[in-house]
Figure 1: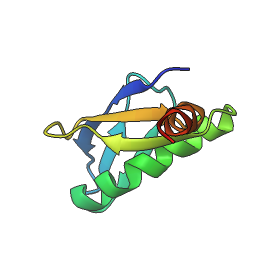
Figure 2: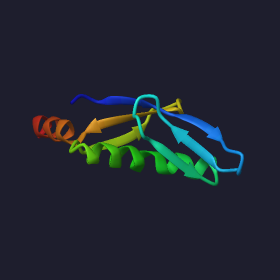
Figure 3: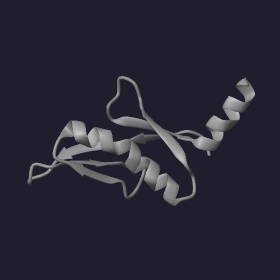
Figure 4: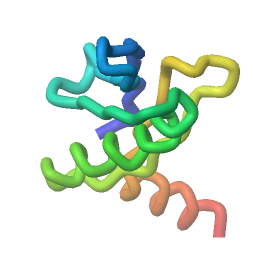
Length: 85
């Protein structure tokens, strides 16, 4: 697997909670009382979804774009680090 862009949409619910979902990762649903708290929870939620499919990833937010994250397979990171050493 190559790195995957995961777009995330944000919505404020009627009860005041903020929700995040992704058109790229079915089943992703994160909720939090604050938008800042929600954004902090998104990487681990993405990682958990990939882990459930036996594809461990590390997730980072795309710089200057708060609605996109990148899921990078840990195996790919390990290969790149081995080439550098």
